[in-house]
Length: 121
Image (cartoon, rainbow, N blue to C red; front, side, top):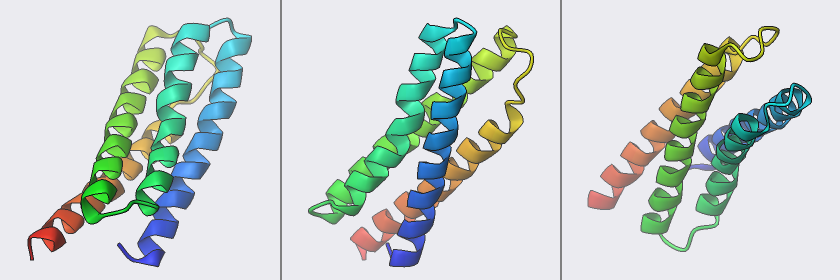
């Protein structure tokens, strides 16, 4: 993975993590601690695992950490949809969060696929 792609996915995941921290604070103010904490853990884990992947010792380690990031992004999408569907906070627009996390999933999927293909060649 080139520097350009790594900086893009790392920045996007960091920005998403910041938004999730802020959303967690809003959910905590409304006394929705459990769901907010679940989302906080998965949403901030995406960038942490990408950061670890970039420091990986091997291509296999790199792909493994990015796969964990992808799973965390999928879990985050689930929690966002669940919180929205439950209607516990009517004043939050969840669409931007969903757009961001789906974009991260697409980027991660592409990087993982390319890395695996490069491993085979």
